[in-house]
Length: 459
RNA sequence: UCCCCAGUAGCUCAGUUGGCAGAGCAAUUGGCUGUUAACCAAUGGGUCCGCGGUUCAAAUCCGUGCUGGGGAGCCA
Image (cartoon, rainbow, N blue to C red):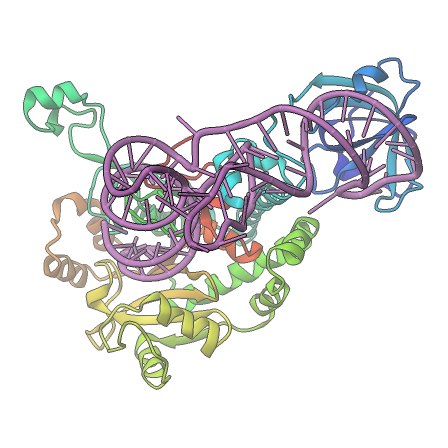
């Protein structure tokens, strides 16, 4: 007999008769005549109720079933006379695969997120975390679906990179030198290292993506990214996933159009395909989520320049901890004011002063600002960071010189501006931040299966 | 890294002015019931985060370290 998953069972209109299910017991209630068990198999939020009668030959064993126990059950799928579920299984056979002893850390009651983080290997067995990671899976799929439909090519950028100057924060060094090698040489001799030079984990696939955009046209990378920043916040982890589209023959406007289309597509996909899991978050995590989803889906995102944003902030009469002035990098309190209070919807901020942005962003005609764009979202802050890239070789070289960047490691990057250079643009979208946005989860550690943060690499 | 808060039973937490360590849930045992955060009763369960100090006496006050949370910076 073939196994049926619970997400299929609970949606049936008519009973197929006998069914076979496999899963884990979430809770059990006993009576003298029979036991009620709720089984979950991870396929959906819902459990299936199983009724085990005391005439089953292993009923004594069944009475010993505990929360967390894995089972294989055969029985008739019948309409449930009880409230709360359409179907239940009248078991004709209950096979215990593995009994969970009393030390099983998950109880029927609600646990705190902080506690569940200490048992990250077991937390996907809870309703909330099961839902989070099903949504995460579905959203990863939706990203590939969106880009395939738009004719983008998927690029896997290298995770180990040779340059230490991608300019997006502290990097993790990759080396095969042993501590004793280093001690003997008195230093890290990279010429003796695996790659013959210093190597690091990537902080962005952008530079690779640019090369492929200038070859395949429209591409995207979607994969892990690493930052060795000592960041201790609810919005940062050392290893996270980033989506980075890069488009040839695209300017800043096109970049924003694309970002807005992407976000709206992913939100619509979530609402359509993760309805049941999302309902948990709507009910128990953040009651304002449906409103935010509606805003994301149906309202045009605001678009304004950094300069205009500064003016709005100056005129706001808000008491900010950090004073607003042209040339400063916006603080989170400023970004939150713009997205949450002033516009009350996502905001694209463009054209930042060149001094606070990296070398590869395209110089605007005013020679003061660059064609950067950040998407600020209520509660999350920066969801997207990107730019139109500097495609003019002379301008690019000037900027690198101004910022004291060595040219040699970038010879290949500069080559792309020598041979058939075209305007192009792209951005990075933090996958985990997107998940936080649509689930209302407030700590990024709770949307990552096994989060890596300063001082924590368990599991 | 900086600022603030917290750490007491397996979990969530209470603990008064410094004076015998507590509750709910969970677990175990029994009872009862088409139950559904089931219900009722009994039982077991403690390095009060670690170290040092003040005191006749410290979960409680002081110092310090560790861990966790919130905020900031950095960014996605």
